[in-house]
Image 1 (tube, chains in turn cyan, purple):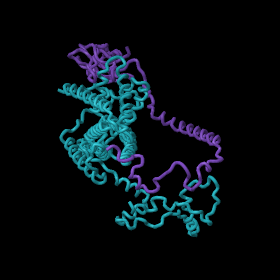
Image 2: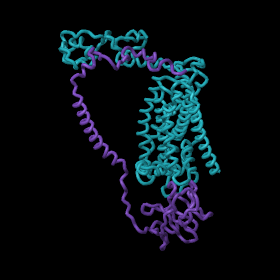
Image 3: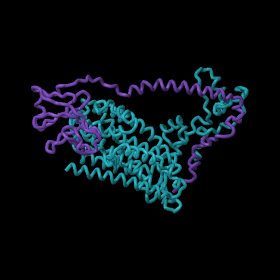
Image 4: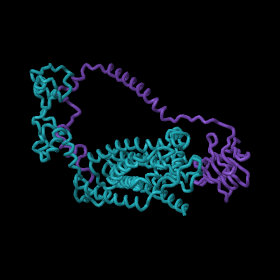
Amino acid sequence: MAENQNPAAGNAPAKPKPAAPGAAKPAAPGAAKPAAPAAAKPQAPKAAAAPSGVYKPPVDRTDANPYKNNRVGALGAWFQERFYVIMPILDYLKKKEVPKHRLSFWYYFGGLGLFFFMIQIVTGLLLLQYYKPTEASAFSSFVFIQKEVPFGWLIRQIHAWSANLMIMMLFIHMFSTFFMKSYRKPRELMWVSGFLLLVLSLGFGFTGYLLPWNELAFFATQVGTEVPKVAPGGAFLVEILRGGPEVSGETLTRMFSLHVVLLPGLVLLVLTAHLTLVQILGTSAPIGYKEAGLIKGYDKFFPTFLAKDGIGWMLGFALLVYLAAVFPWEIGVKADPLASAPVGIKPEWYFWAQFQLLKDFKFEGGELLAIVLFTIGGGFWMLVPFFDRQASKEQRSPIFTIIGLLVLAFLLVNTYRVYAEYSALAH
Amino acid sequence: MAQTGNFKSPARLGTLGDGAEVSASGAVASGKPREEGLKGVDFERRSFLHKIVGGVGAVVAATTLYPVVKYIIPPVKEVKVVNELTVGKASEVPDGAYKIYQFNTDKVIVVNKGGALTAVSAVCTHLGCLVRWEKDQDLLFCPCHGAKYKQTGEIISGPQPLPLKQFKARIEGDSIIVSKA
């Protein structure tokens, strides 16, 4: 881009000029390290000589405003003049393209996950205006939001549904990138950061589940935080998580702080890395598609693909509002630490597969084995780009496709078993 | 597509201008060869200073983290342990009914079967849900994962590893008194 190859962005004037005699410090060996100041020195005496007393750093630009001829408005020019350093980055982002082929459909789910996450931030902030995270008032403030606050029911239902849809989108996104082997070199860290985002999202789900402080949430959290106890060091972790030996008001406050402070911060951090990597490395296409001529063309990411994403987001938003209005989540009964557990305690659906495995492993040490299996399995899944050498050489790797299918089948079958068992209980 | 072009130096990087061409080897920008610049550096002294700075840093980090870690470990609540406790009125647990009471650090389920009171821990030994009294089946049942216990806490069936801890319950006058077994 000729118009952007301005001297201000690069270091064009940095060609080694002989040190100006006025600024002549004899260049001692080792003292000549900083390159840029050295280049700027020829202009420095002028600024230093100004008697005003206010130091102005030397600016090594040939033109006072190299962007004055650009086709932007006055405001844009104002920003360009000050932040010209990022212009090459913006130009770089403009070049991102998304390949078009018959599996392009699956490219939309990551963006949808992001969309539902943004909904979560907004609705979460709204819920925070009325929610009180203490044992005494959590449930009543939750009911207050649902019944008294104008549109409170809507905000809460959207928050609950959007959480579920977000995790659903992340699962779809994860399996589609898995089967397209998009994790292969050079995108290993995109996969790893994506996996971390899924884990953090599951953490959001788990910590958020308790906040309404109803019976179901109370006992689901009781069961969920009891499980790690069998692992070495688990009891200590559980105590910290619960804020005491059992699930109580302290647990509520701790879950709340994780849900609204720690996890959002971590997610923003990892999400930034994930999205930056997407921009730098671009969108992957399945192995062999380019060679086979299956790529029908490329969409510019800004603005074409983003606009298409926008269509997906609007469909997602419509679905979200529909679900929130037509299939409301229950309010439940206030948690009572001295009441028997109600029938049909189960976690959220995205923990059902693990839940079912725990129930199946009834033998001595079965729980520990299940935890170990899940830890190893999760670690393998996270590091799969480093195991799948074939894909990284742009060769098909059917073994990993089979592994992916087995994992998917395990999750679906176990999830369905929990669904079948508990819907039978409900009737 | 496989990767668009050579991902190690994609064509897109060209827009980053001359500044993107960072070379890790060879001369530094001022034109001085790097080797000359490092001549005379005492590496033994440098590594010693590295260790000192690292060691001091570790001590500072540890002294900072210690109170934080201690802070998040919940303090143990002092519970005054008693041998017996009046937990409620006898009318709260009529024949065939049950109720869970707090007794010291335990949650105790008091069951009234034909006027005779029994008391066992209400915390299922499987995953810590609170059990209920199933009058019709004459057993204690945990709704979370289907553990079944006798009224006295012995295991009937289910995933639970241990029986329920036993307590004693009696009626004195109008009140229920729970005591250690």
